[in-house]
Image 1 (tube, rainbow, N blue to C red):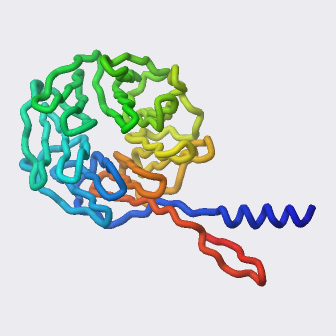
Image 2 (cartoon, one colour; image 1 turned 90 degrees about the vertical axis):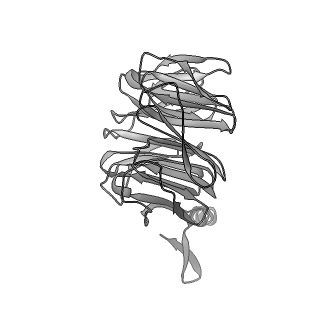
Image 3 (cartoon, rainbow, N blue to C red; image 1 turned 30 degrees about the vertical axis):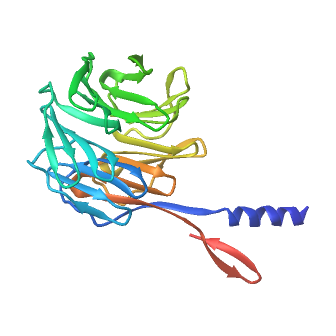
Amino acid sequence: MRFFLIINILFSLVCLSYALWLQIPSPTTNDINDIELRSPTYGWMIGYDNSARFNGGGWTSFPLSSPYNVQGVSAVSNNSAWAVAPNGIVLNFTGTQWQHVATPTPQNLNDIYLTSSLNGWAVGDHILLHFEGITWNVAMNPPCNLLCIFGNSNGDLWVGGSNGMIYGYNGSSWMPHQSPTNATITGIWFTDSTHGWACSDAGEILSWSGTQWSIVPQPNTTPLNGICVPASNLGYAVGNNGRIVEYYNSNWTINSSPTTQNLNSVFMPSTTTGFIGGDNGVLLQFYFTPVEPISVGNIKAFYH
């Protein structure tokens, strides 16, 4: 019995790991409003009068054509990205610089997602735009402001907005889903078609079961601005005053944070890579490493 107890203890120690968010040097001192990485070696951050591209090793700044307060970005390929800003502004990065692209609306645009270089969606105040390779066109005028959009390689497409409204795309049309909150949905993420998550400006976290949305019991009440769940057992939501909420082993708990700045976006293309962006250029990086071993007599212990 004692032998099996010792084996279990040693196995638990060996399986320990250490994950944390650390603040790193940022390419800007302006607010970072959105971050998207299409892979661990390619992505963009965007914000007030700033943009920067990630190459796997660091961030390189690219000036905007005007001091836009850019709200959302979508990385398409190594030399292509799209971004949106208030007053119907859509920007396209074609390899060397950002260019202004015409749209059919003066409405504020809040987020964007390109499924490919020839297909994409942008959401804003009472508007949803569709791009089919040449021009942007109005696809829907919903009764609410749309704040966030999510898409992945599985074909999942969802948007969230004010008054708890969430829309899911079924391949031909957008279907409304009234969530169990009246707060504004500020972030949305799907690991697959039957497992989705959303967060709100009331600090709520919502879960999609495949048929309906429900509010998840958790300790946070601080307004949340973004959510990312890259795996079935790991995820993060971020919000005002440096709030970081961690999802691990089916539970959401408040995590330690190295900043008190408002955090606006979190993105993890894998369970070992990720960034959080916030006000005044605050940039956090996710670190996941095995726990370092140390020797205690003839038995190896682990610490972090």
